[in-house]
Image (cartoon, rainbow, N blue to C red; front, side, top):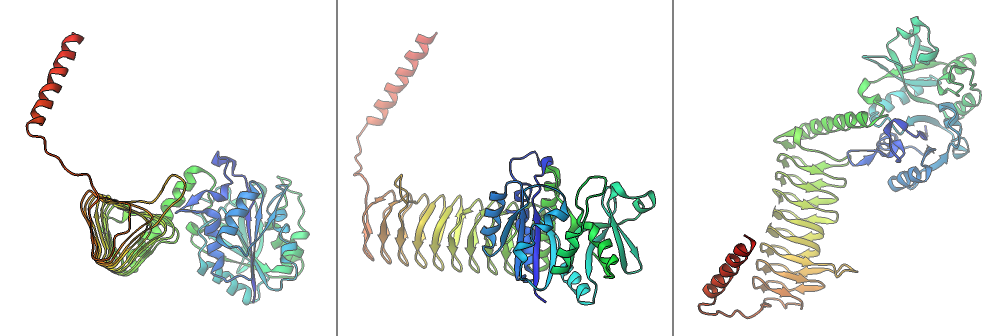
Length: 452
């Protein structure tokens, strides 16, 4: 059965106290909206519709950056969740299949939970609602059940004392045939305490038409909604805890798990080892047997099998490390490819470069890639040796098995197997050091006396 996603992302999120739309606040390096889209993507939807409102242009840009096939519609007036779903009607024109409603501020619903909802639909239930047993039901809507039949959803403010005692609560996630859902949504009224069009009313409307409804439950943690900065911090902590546990389960060694921070898409290969205080930004892949040493920061990069990175290293977007590459302490690499066995062990910057196999980059080497207007590329061949404190002024090419003398400023290409020396001629002035020190000390003494 084809599936369509409707993701509600129109809320302003006033309690965030932010100019940024609520669903664009980030967890693990990605907007909450993207987390919801990733959850739904596991169902391989034929269509995805994002219902935006506050900051619609920003929400649209973020959604399309993750998946350029989605449709984004705008809820101009905020008249409730039922009204929000109705905005997706035109975007689903001609679609035949099931629709499932997700929320851009509820980022942790798991794919297996959505699969369970689809299974309930396949079993013949017209409407399937995701519920959870709440430790503190608070002001959640309650699911009123009779056996496995869901009779209605009642909002807290409209509930009786008996209904408020129910602990099975509504997550807001609903699945139904898309056409049936839109027909039911069109029949929703706003005669309630808030004067809004409650999506939850479709359960009673469905039953009035002789259609069955049921609920599927999931752990409460999956339904965590984020409405405040404090809630965002709790969600981040929950994501990190789960990501660390998954990494350990998958055969990754984390020597101090609580100090390692993952992005939403971090991939760590089996038998990789991550030392304390490592931060992964988005877009990082680390292959099997690699070692990421303490206090390193990686983003948008690939680390090959057996490579060693750090400590105190920074890998920026576009970095590609082949197998057994070594990146040492206080080294920064950006938009550069390092072939197998290359080494950059100390205090260096390698940007916009290609470093050949088994080349050694000496301490303090810098690829001078920016002229103030444009970036330029440095190419170093295989088996080359770059002496300490070499400045490579791009664009420049160093040939295979070539060398540069320490302290050189290289502005011209160096042929293969050649030695390049580019530094001023040293002169030694006998006795001049003592004379200069004596002169400086006398000047200092005079100034101190004058100051008194």
